[in-house]
Image 1 (cartoon, rainbow, N blue to C red):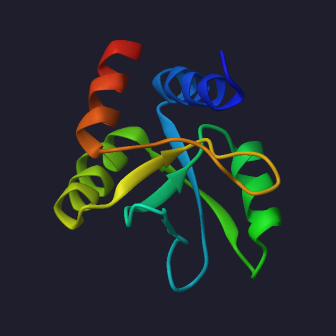
Image 2: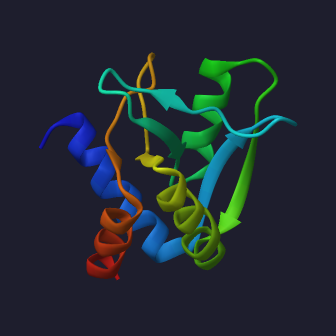
Length: 114
């Protein structure tokens, strides 16, 4: 399994167990990434240490916050779907790369991980 594949599997396994997702943000909100195909992604992590590494890499005063999984699913995934924003999971490495999914794909993967 690729590094990205193992990070993705860990995301769904971890959040299904802990019922918490982690994000990085500042007072203006969370950073997003625009891919080459024009898709904007909003990243989340499955553990605090993973999110802390991302905040350190991105810098700019970003802080780590947690969110209960049920609120994330009900609010964030719904809003992201309406806005056409993909969900990045457990981006890692010095450039913070990884896979992104539609909100529907995230919900489907969570359902099979539980």
